[in-house]
Image 1 (spheres, rainbow, N blue to C red):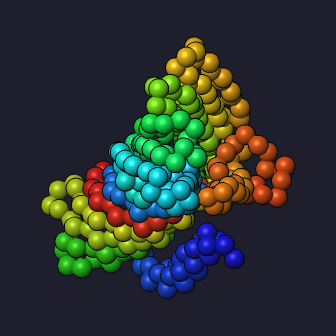
Image 2: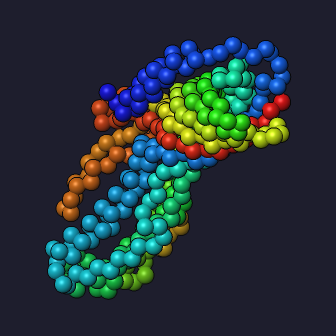
Image 3: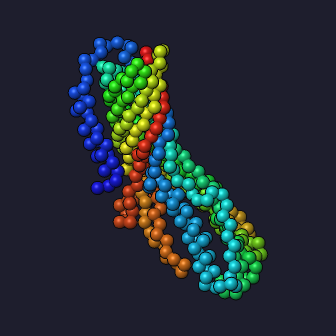
Length: 344
């Protein structure tokens, strides 16, 4: 059983276990009146870890280490002291993954009795993570075995426009079960759910260049962007504590765990490739496509080791090979929000 399905079933079982005793505890309902309505405005932070989306950052970090650290360390061990390597990393210490998201929303709530209420609202979630990573490797090969000419050869990697982003919105129906403590404090249990609508985006601007001892530079600049949209399901279970005021406002703090998962995302992608050559005019190639997000598994083998890569893409159809895996956007996580209720 997948981790995503297990979490959804666990939330469902907890909710089913709570509903019967809560339902039996309900007293006679209120007569219908406008005073039973209130608007709730809330916002806070959600701790998330969208593994498939974050694998794009993991892939780029592994790519950089494989071609610029592992590679030149191998040659340094192969040729000995005659082969000198000086590496300088700039910018972020690593490509940043998404770990947190901003969550906020609004609800229209109706209290049917002193301990039971229903609400309908919309919840939003958004997160963006950027990275600026660079590395320069200067190679001096005194043995003249690897480099066919004397002097220093500089290999440079730069990705200053790397970005991961995701957003979601959920039209949500919720049941609230509460108990009053004194004249001010109130404790509640929340059970909510609804359809999930998600978007995600990735952007990479990878520049690779080699400059030889004479100053001649060659390389490439590749800018790749992908966006995707999909749908899924959201289930939320939590609790809150609220404080009544003498007026029409109540304030509350709410903590919950939300299961939010979309497993089929499609959208457009594009790339622009520019050839870098200090002795020629730049030549660029543009590509555009649209398709389902997936992950391609492949292995690159060279003299300095193996590179097992999981590359997220939306260009190659998922039914073209067994090494292509489905992409899922998992925005599940614990969240803490604060808000206020405005009584009508």
